[in-house]
Every structure is written in structure tokens, then in C-alpha cells.
Length: 273
Ligand code: BEZ
Ligand code: FE
Image (cartoon, rainbow, N blue to C red; front, side, top):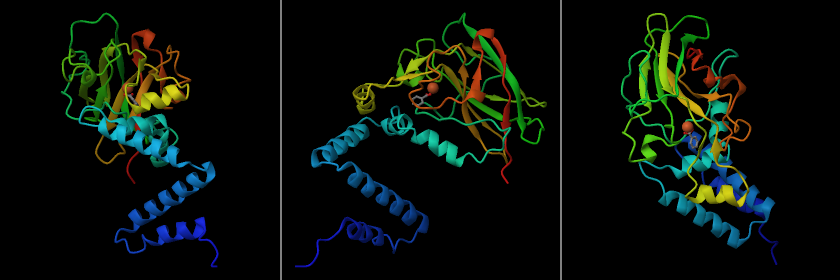
């Protein structure tokens, strides 16, 4: 009787199946993914039922995805993968602004806003805050006409795309810096909010006793030709969820005092070398 086919031989067969791929990077990524998946199955002694539960979980996530809802990004976020991808790709110099997750609620094509204009399009809001500062390069020069794409939840704790009663593109805007690299963004004081929990990701959080809260923040995507775009947030120091962000996105350098109503925050971009 020939010896039983081993797990290692089985893995090698799968790895070798990628040897003729014409895209070498694709082959490398798939080989690594398969090796880790096989190791995971062996390490956990994954049962057939557990494997099927995983398949059903991913199927349910796929069914929830459309142009307004992205359950797979949410899954990546809550497993800390989105933040890790940012960290691995950061290559930022010491003084450059730290990145954090993009999240599933970025919408391209926000309206242009003037210096100091509010992103809040619905009614007037008492709890407004002015965030101003300079966009500069890590070599110190101010960057004129840099773009700041800004988005945030309304005081109800929802993004416009989550609530049909909110004017589309409210709480979003694209600002430009002046000749001295200065910008001024007016917004409502952000509130803590819960990520969507009505899908499989919510079930995963509940089943593992995890919180679904994100600490209050304003999103920024800051870009300038020839420089690395920074995707980040500024977080409110008063939030009780800074240490328990559902998506592990908080960095100390991004925490500011929104209660001051007028706050200063500079964005520092690295040149693409
Ligand atoms: C957000 O900040 O918009 C967000 C990030 C990750 C998951 C859900 C929401
Ligand atoms: Fe957010």
C-alpha cells in the first residue's frame, strides 16, 4: 500500500497549479493566500460544518453589496485588514500625516465648497466647528490648490447614503487650499456612530461580544499632484470609543479637541519619489 497523500503534498499540488500564470504578481499573491488558508484549516482542524458556515457567511456578505452598501469592506475593516493594508503601504516619513481606513461611505464627486463653507446642507446647525490649517509637503513647503475631499455623518449619526431623508451629498465637500496652502472646513461636531449591524458583519460582532461603535470623526482625503494622497480622519478627543474603535483606525496623532469649536490641523504629504 502506498503511503497516504500528505497535507504538504496536497498544498504543493495547488501551489504548482499557478506556475504557468502569465502575471507573476498574481501567482505570488495566490500562492501566499492558498498557503495561509491551508495552514488555517489545519491549525484550527476546521470541521465541514464550520467551513460551510464560512461559505454561507461570505455568500450573505455578497448579497448585501451594491453601490450603496459594501459588506466586504466592512468585513475587511472589522477584521483589521483594511488598516493593515494602509500601514503596509504607508511608506510615510516621520512627520507625514498618518493614514487610516477609507471606510465604505466615501462617495466620489462631492460638491466643491468655498473656503470656510459648511459641508452641512440641511438646516442650520448649532454645533458647528471650523477645522482650519495648512496642507504642506514633508519638506515644509505649503501646497497651493491642494484638494481636500471631506465627508462625515450628520448629527443623526448617519451618512447621507444611509438615510433617504438626508439631502444627497450633504455632509460632503471638496475644498481647495489658497496660495499659502491654507484651508478652512466648517462642519457639525461629529458624533460617535455604529457601523451597520444588520448584516453578517453585525452577526459576527454580536457573536464575539464586540462593539460596533466608531469614535466621532471627520474624514479627509487630501491630494496634490506628485504627492502621495493621504486618506485619514481627525477624531474627537471627547469620544468614549477612542480605545474601542470597531475598525481599529484610531492613531494618537489624529485626535483633536472638537469642543474648542475652532481647531487647527495641518496635513503633511510626502512627495512621490
Ligand atoms: C467610516 O468611518 O465611515 C467607516 C469605516 C469603517 C467601517 C464603517 C464605517
Ligand atoms: Fe466614518
